[in-house]
Image (cartoon, rainbow, N blue to C red; front, top):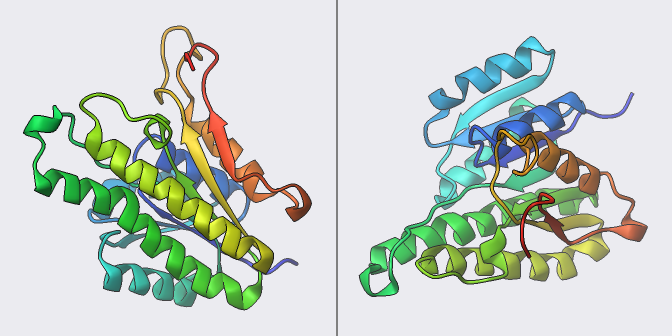
Length: 230
């Protein structure tokens, strides 16, 4: 029997984060979902457990270095070695540049980019010991294009993409797969059925990228619905 491994997710919201937790739990991973308010994850926890999945929630501020280190240490002590780490947290302030404050820029950058660095660093430390694992970052259209009234989002997402690319070039030769996902479109369900990105379909893409053989690893992965303009 294969050794049990864990999937750590920071940013487990009700759409993509929840779908990622369900997909990796279905695949047999111990899933650890982290939030500053873990009580909001109770419904997700109950749902996955009712399906026979292994999941725990943890109190963790993804931009607090000590808390992220403790999260990885605790998950590996209580559950199993981390094989998959996913950074899915997000924050933004939709404002004209002339009205955007330093505090708003700083906070968005911390949530979108600094937190990704902390998760990536702690995952890499542990995965290097085993020479395997996947570190997956959730990007957005703003990772590639800066839009009006979206400076806070563009700065953080551009930075996260740069982080992912640098990590990939460093860690791929060590057996650690690093991938960045450009979620190019709105997420949800709609009357047309599939003109928005379905969370479970995005999650399936993440899982399949994790399962790729290293002879054909993807790094920059774009997902968009058929109706999205690009």
